[in-house]
Image 1 (tube, rainbow, N blue to C red):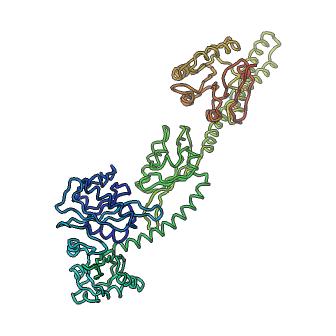
Image 2: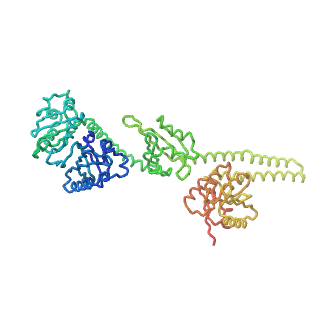
Image 3: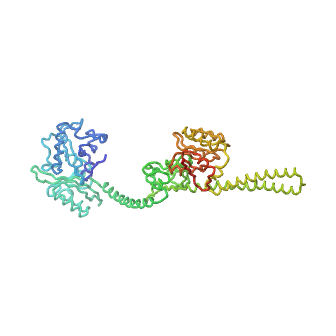
Length: 618
């Protein structure tokens, strides 16, 4: 349990010694700290702190009244410590009670913020509280405990700074004799070890005849040096005159060394913070996503570029493991495993991966993951760089598709067209050699007509392939002007479907219209009739499975036909997002009308852009 306020050296020693009850409260009396002695003997539990347990609620009514008076007195008399005798605390009662010294805790900027209670169980009745300014500041029982504590060094000196008593702890710690401690001999170990300013400050404290606390070094056997926390409590005789000091010291060498080490670490952290600030400025303007994790892959920092690439900001990502934002339905399992395993073998990782944007959109990235080591070569986390390579991957896919198209074009030119032309040439050569017989000419002309029809068909197919190969989108001319057998309408609004059927029948009375109010049934129909030539009109907004779901499933088919979006959405992001589906040729806004249908037959687009038709009836 940690003391909640500023901890001075005197109180630090008292807490370490643990021979007095120490309790602190806020200004309203809520207990916010108690030491081990209080926990054990007063039966206080750390759970009490979580329920705002008030100290006055643990007191009987007479003690509660006295408690309030003492607190008011502390605040009225310039924050001078006051004493109070308490009979019991909670269910714990003491034969002669506990005597507490009550001090006001103040903050330089906001004033009083709490109270500190330092107490000791009394072994005999006390008629009147100890006046800290007139009588011995340390009760006899406290002194006896101090002298017997093997961890605390105690000197008793008179008003002339002559040592009259030193406890056994001093003799064992400094390997000194009785003569080396009496009179002013004890000062030699401080004079020879401490720097002159600190030693003079110590003498000044002894001369001021006031309570003090000082950190000072002392020389031990073998010229070793230890650090002591010396607390001086003035001793007052029965006539109210200064009678010397009770000095007690605690070895704080470990604490002092730790403080020096902490200072070095603080200075180093300050330097690192400056470097970190520079790094953040550079990272903030980078278009590369940068992520830093701890030693177990938990994200501790990321720049804005990660949000731009994947949609995740730092607030929602802190504490998550990196692979939690680097995976999705189609992310390869071996890629996810490689990210997880990297924390075990501390190896570098460099992969191209299919990830998912927070919105669910697929994103191809180049992921570089490197372990980070401090100046002592100790592993302290990972540095991850995420590069968006979506354009590169799309280009690779288009190149592969265009390569296949070129192979088809090569087949057409080298076989189908060439075959028919050679046949025509052969027929014409044969005509020259034949007798001029009408029946023979008619038969040969029929063969020429068949070949020219095949050549014409091959030329049209070649034209479509050239359009595809030289454009970044499918030739709308090829897919919208072809002959079709049916039109498929997918919309969950029954009335809209009926009206759309009427419009379609007006323009295309001979084409069959299939209507589906459910995405799954529409997909089932299309999959069951793969050879049917059709145009598909699909809405985006459905209560269960949306139009986007249909498009994702439709895209998995081996040769998906063209699709026209027919929606009421005017959102630009929907228009932009629809461009990732190569089979979408038009983005239409409702209602469907005759002009739109007629325009489909005439519209031809050979550049990379979804055609948006937004007709309004006159």
